[in-house]
Image (tube, rainbow, N blue to C red; front, side, top):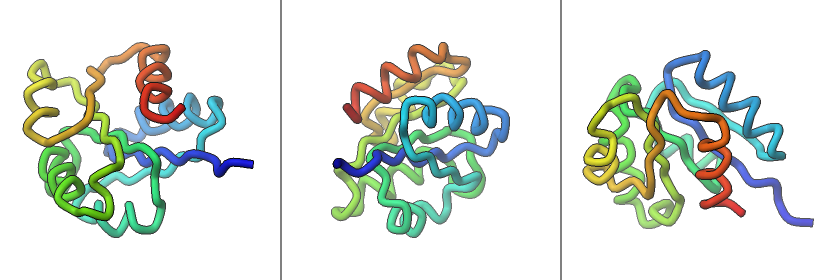
Amino acid sequence: MSKTKTVLIFDDDTIILEVITVVLMDLGLNVEVSETSHDIIPRVESSKPDLILMDNWIPNIGGVEATRLLKADVRFNHIPVIYVSANNDIQSLADRAGADDFLSKPFDLEDLENIVHKYIA
C-alpha cells in the first residue's frame, strides 16, 4: 500500500484554505495548511509534503521569498510548488519565485484537481 500523498497549502485566506482542503481530501489526499510562510522550512520538514500550493500574499515573507527559500534547500527543492494568486502577473511571479507551475485565483475546482494530478499522480 502506498503512502497517502500530502499537500501543504500556504495561504492566509481561511475560506480558500477550507475549499481547497475539502476538494483535495475528496481526492484522497492528506492536507496540511499554514497561514504564514516565514517558517516554510520547519513546516516542510515536519509534514514532508509531496506538493505545495503557495499563495503570493502570505504573511511574513510572502510567497516569492518562501518559495525561493524552499528551492534553495537541497533537501526540499524537488518538491513541486504551485503558485496560487489573484495577481494578473502570476506567471512572472511564479517564474521569479522558482515555482513549478501556477494557478490563477479565482480558479475552477476542476483546474485545481487537474494541476494537482499533474504533479502527484
